[in-house]
Length: 297
Length: 318
Image (cartoon, rainbow over all chains, first blue to last red; front, side, top):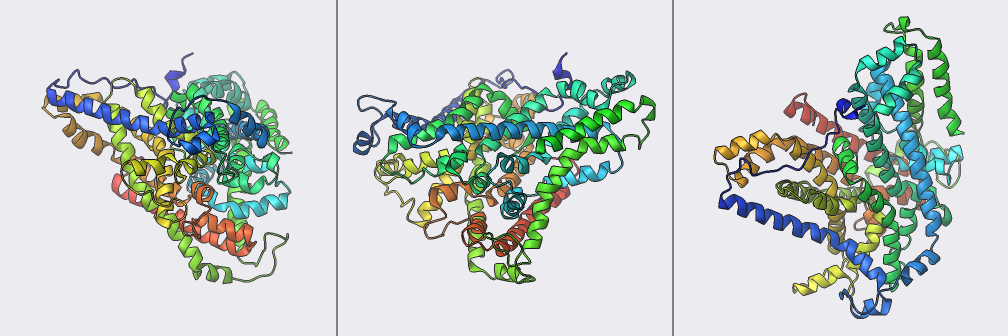
């Protein structure tokens, strides 16, 4: 069935096509042409750091030192990638980041959608209080709480584990509100019909509501994955063993390290960028929509 | 252990609700099942959002250290007195505020300008989204690796660009003003796309007819932007502003990775101050007091914004 019918937030807008009512006079055309030039130039400038990192990673170190701003000076090689891969445990960092981000996505989607479902479809005593508490949570600056959080996890004996990274982030108030507004858009008749058929609430949640929530699930999942993959401060504190670190924490130890190993450092940076950039290129539209719909930062 | 804790309520939900018949849908009929659905979230919420606030409040009253377990001895409010009279704490607070003042105007207005210009293009939207938003998915450490290389004296691209236009590049790592320049430029590149996307989405919500009517009345592109687009984007600008201020006050990654708060602590943000006192000097109680002072400041900013917005924009949300 069409999910678009029950989609209150995620709407796809075609790029606006102007000109039908615009008076196609000279000033308008000139303005649009100027605008196009400006934006395109700016966008190209924005791509330079990526291009620069990539090109540098393919050059030889002595050549970079001799002609720092030359794009091409004979021969590219992937040698820096081999040595970057061998000199730091990038493989373990990838695995750690992947496991942590995946667990974060699963738990965030599950528990946030469950409470949102309860808030929409179940009349329970204390519901208003639960709603207010979650709303207040939107304003809690959790990043500020690293120190007491650290003490808590040490007391629980969870330091250095994946759980220490995953658990603090999964009760995400923003995600609850994304699911809440989405589930509210699903026709109540569907739920009522299932109730009359004798379906349990768990069944209604997991087999009727959740399948219809796919756009909300993908928005929350993608943004949770990115946030979790890029998290720096908390993993830096909790994961102290080099091998147990995530990509951002591991890479940060390379900043200001061997200053002459330009190519190798840039190769590490490129390897650190690649996974999420690949995800981004595949899901560009969904990611942009997710950001627009939630305003998570 | 946690998997069990999360899966258990779900199974219980199944059992209890199966026995319930459709007839018992009274207003109070779903209390049990409602709480079971909310339980996993609320448990983690209380443990890891409310919990740290309370733990921080308790620790801040003791001379707890972060090396040995246990609370240490009761010191009352003296940690707070120390924090509030500490020059280092207020200096780091000022650095976070200064970072906010440096980056917020740029990140509020530049993405707005380019979102407006890009939205006038009939084609190529994907390209602008790609170019501007891609940096946002890059981990802070990778951004810092690339920019640290571009800021390198002699070999770095940005250092060379200064030379090409006849300027002496500032000392990006050795001078305070150079360091702020370096962090501001990096942050602009990194987070520009987020606000660009928010503005673009808001621009697409504006009805085509408004523009058509204006065009018929003879309004040129610049007048359309000034008298239609920008006024209608005001709620989005206010949203971007608060998100930007709150995120900037929490700055840590870039300054810590690129500069380690240097040169000589002259850019150290408040989170790094808490980090340093708590985990390098091991003064847990003191750092907890600093955390709570900072926490209260952040919450005050968001509550003030909510109140202002309610007064100016009425009940409608941004």
